[in-house]
Image (tube, rainbow, N blue to C red; front, side, top):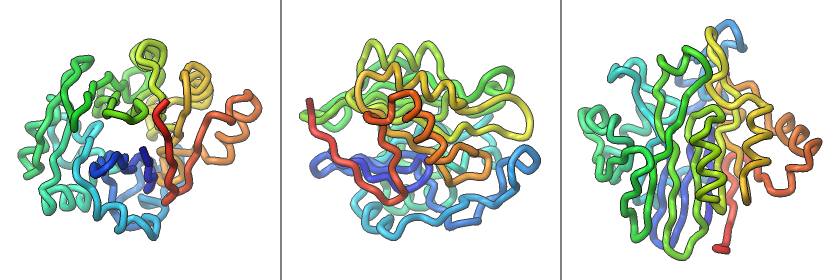
Length: 266
């Protein structure tokens, strides 16, 4: 299995002939508004461009997983850091089969996206000769998560490959811990940007929860959702130092944009 990290939460899982795109945010640098204007520097998003090899990687995509997309079915509230207008267009133009939560299906179909597989929490379904399970993702602590698009993580098992858990946008919860301790993924991908908006508490795991996630994870961890959005203050160097101080860096990958990681089945 190869993991091609593009930017933020957007990456591609390569397994044989299958290339599975996760959460396509494909806008050019600065084409989206700031997601916070007072708590964080009000830079336009994304704050960095896609890597030079993005077109080559995207040209091989065969399927797509979307962790979350919408709030209350309102287009203006779509979470564009996981599915933006160029991402929409990419999926529609290429008629890419999409996997998502049951609750997101009608919204995505309304805009012409080819939803092929829908999931409910903790109920596995067949996918590409293997199995995929949707895991609850709580997009924030306190009242703020009720206003966010509480979506899903995915636990994916493909034949002959390492199992992989994609956290999606979530804080650390009992469901997250259940995946790590009961399903014991070979690879766990965590959204590590420690995002917050101008109001409310954290909408992704703060630093102490990221340390807990890596400590509890049974095997390798990949940290993404970093250094691409103005409301995500966590930096790669800050995360690296903290994990190093806690003797957790040796099994954590913090990929640069455009980097490819290779994993073998255990």
